[in-house]
Length: 124
Image 1: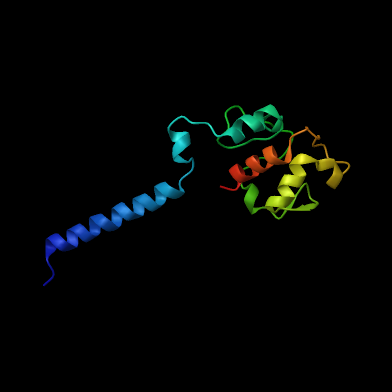
Image 2: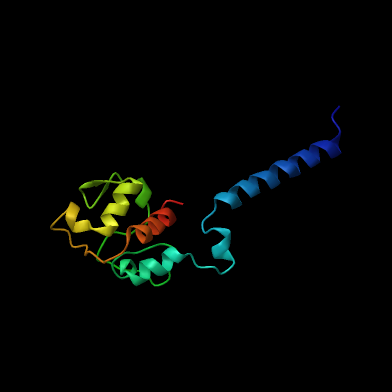
């Protein structure tokens, strides 16, 4: 007959490991829980993303002009014309009108490096 103490310890270990796995994949990341705001938040406010889009996790990003960023990584296209890849999203953020001349999204002057930071944040 198995040792009850050993079984109890194994159950506790499994529960702790499951909790750790959830914590490692939970949103927001630990840094945000500790009050550290990702640079991407500041970039999305500076370049106007937060004024036009609802961005989960970004304070005051409740815009209603463009689509919400909720579920962004699961979409197939950006602006209905660009494949939703990391590179496609960087290109869209940097110069949307080069990809869709009639889009309402403005060219903001953001650099490729800054756009990449935003994409990295959105794809976390």
